[in-house]
Amino acid sequence: MAITIKVVKYEQDENDASKTMVGFDITDTNIFNITKAVDSSVTTGSKTPDEISTEAYAAIAHRVTAWQEENANIGKTFDPDASKLV
Image 1 (cartoon, one colour):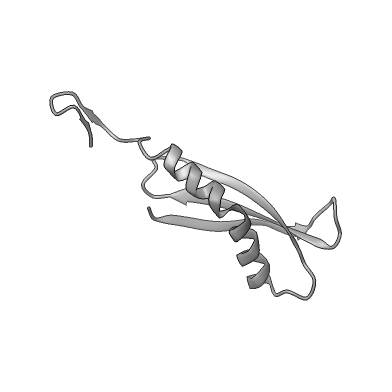
Image 2: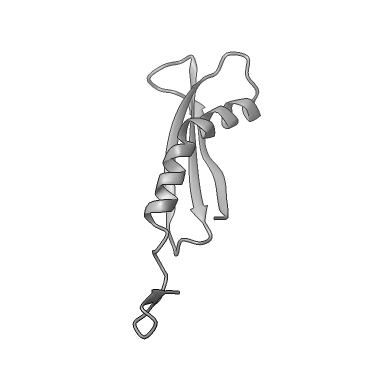
């Protein structure tokens, strides 16, 4: 499954000033016309933006995988003659 992950939010967490809220829009090229938006809050400390983004994604990766699995058949065509999704 090929995914594109775009950062759409990168700001101080309004509930905890010591954290950065990172928002991602995730698109799977195998899932027809669906993008998943996911936010993750990470303790900022002295971390670089790359480190914060990596940690934020790691915290939500399981949700992305579950979303991909739940939507794996979206956009496929059912062939009744072969009784298969193609």
